[in-house]
Length: 518
Image (cartoon, rainbow, N blue to C red; front, side, top):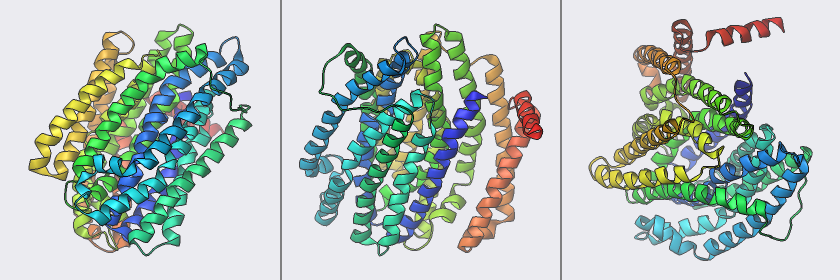
């Protein structure tokens, strides 16, 4: 129940952010379409996001949260944890400042390296460089947000960090509302909105950390034992994140060489795929890392494995129907949310096909989020680096093999296949070490969830046949059709899963009795 509560807090607030994100994307698709200016902005937005994940979220949390938890739950308590945080911050800030400055100066060369397909179009290339220089400070801001998020997550205070991304989406939404004419003007406004959103997020997280009793001062950098320990753990994690982000940049490289609009198709499909990934996978991974770290520190590996098993059960219960629904109903979903204005029916059709392919890898994405805390809690950040390196090579090979034949669909297929490769390798390694295995009861539970998913797919096919004209009608008809799809699919899946044992019925009944008692 604690796991469900933590995931509910993170997932619920992440959902709020995603709602604002969908509003932003819906407005952006209508104002910008699948144009050259939209492609330029999406490359400019991807650059700081790539390095944010390198310096911030995954790698930083992997190294920081277990070490902070050790100190917080140790003899030194909060004072020792605060001291460690200040020592890390003293190195973190100068590194980020130097990195940002270097890339601001060298931005044309870097944009050419990852989007050389734009070099033949001088105006598009210049616009991408210009927008990238506006958005890149977001890296500094959001990495500091990740630092304060790590502190709050270690204290099992998840709300502020989960809500913070909503501020970015609100800032970008306001930019589109204020500058709605499209083209270069709206692209520039969006770039300014990115950096403004980073400022708002940092203010929120800094204030939340102070409110939680963690008021930090900026020290002079010193290589203390705590900082050495942090670097020993975080450098391999950063290399692992770096390999994964290189893979993302390789995808960008190939996408910029495809016909105009390809970056937009990839972006809008990924936006829908990211919803369950963030609400389920990222939320669960964030929630279980402090718990697993605490049990490992206390010498209770069985409890750590139990937490991870419960997380796999919950993730598949929620993720399997999402993946199947996205694959089956991709076309109607994309048309309802994004089609209109400059985003044509053909754009929606291509984006829907890309989404259906990418969604086939969604369960693997989510499982990776749940499996990797098993390594990070044991201060093993090297193993994910090795698997990421193998995945990177596989990604390059698959892109070269599939894109010439299938175009943007080949790129999407490579993304999905690589996610499954990464998932299988990480699980096999963790299982062989005896840290975590999917027990027979859990395999049976997942099989029943899959059966419930197939029943849902049949129901979705029936709704699409009955309401076929709605999905090509007006905006209101398309939205009504999507609501009917989502509602019907959700009811069928969870009812069937409950009846055939695809979920913990006893826990659900206990929860229902508690609600009735209240």
